[in-house]
Image (tube, rainbow, N blue to C red):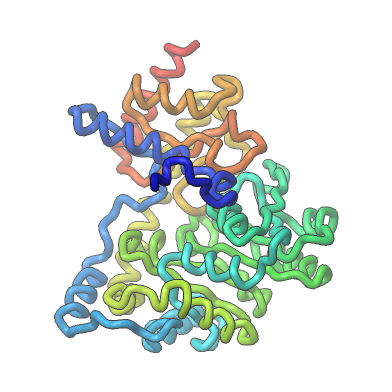
Length: 392
């Protein structure tokens, strides 16, 4: 029997692919043919993992740490994460409320399974990271997308919650710093949002995977204002450990038993050598290195932001975190995917079309990642300017 005519589950058709992956594949093909490609599409730090982390991972393998761990993670790492919250943010978090996951995606997967029944809705900003809405669909839920703009720094606010919470809304999710916009939600706003969600008897999910990568403002956590928030975090971005596939989830004590049960069934445990390697991420010398890298990201932002504005791109809110600039190009095109394809083919600059991040404005926006050297960014701006001039 051939499966060529087999009908896959309905959810598969509703989960869109990352359009940027087509661009990335083409960019790599062009590179293999000898083209010089500048990558501004990938949401990944261009720095290697800290050497202390690499050495700790190597030592873990030599020490035979290759078996399963408890589903919630090794106790030493859960304790290290808790100490990090106290040291960096002045927040006391019981290690028993921390669950180590295979990347932040593993944490989001568990939350979707925990919170969403068929037909339930989770309110989130449009634009947002595509997996946020796709994971809800995976569990037969729905993403309740709220178009947001410069007036709210491209973020949900308390007024959105109060005005648009419906009978099927179960939770609200925000990201600070945000992908794709790089914008933040400050503590006062987080407190207002938390209160609005409490009034609706809903759950509050906060994606903090770019925590630590802030420029000109101190990094914060929603746990400072809401001890019952579900907070997702990751070792991928600030800590530079993308390929180690390690994240964590902080949850209310009352939810931990169910979350651990789900973890046992979904992935059993996070990768063991990665967990031991991550212990080195909190060493003082590692943190000093990571702060140097954060300063370099700030320098890149401070170059690229005015450069793109000088090219006529609309960036009404200065991004204060992550490593993205979300630019409006409605004066240049009404098809950002085609625009990105042409930019790649003609000038060798890869960027991400807004189509990956939502519906509102998706065809006239582009995300530029500044996870590349200043020299590469300068060359990219020269090429983009030339491309725009040719298109005029």
